Length: 122
Image (tube, rainbow, N blue to C red; front, side, top):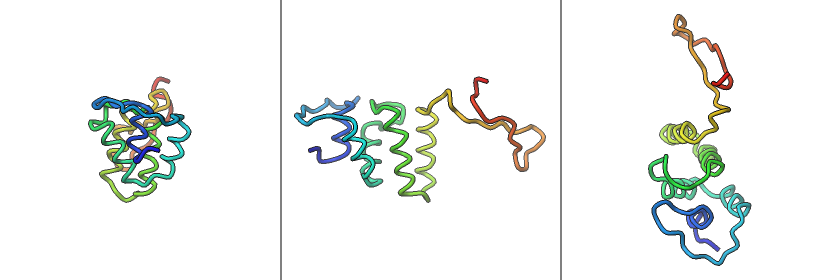
């Protein structure tokens, strides 16, 4: 068994900066998802920051990155720096075709009236 979530992710998805260690474990994604689901915030952040130290790099798939940040924020909802990091990750790796965006009208600076929400390509 892998001793850390980071090691498990490295075996499954590789590492852009270090060689992937040889491992005789059975590597199925559902085992990793189970470990990720019950991991604490420190273990998840260690994995994200070690395997993607610059945010735009790394070989972690989007389906791992986005839920990882969501799980961390569920455990630490009152950390604005972490929220910004998660938002940056979603901006960089989120599904572009489903991106929700809002446009404020030029004359309504107070509350910011919402003009359009939906696919930015429509």
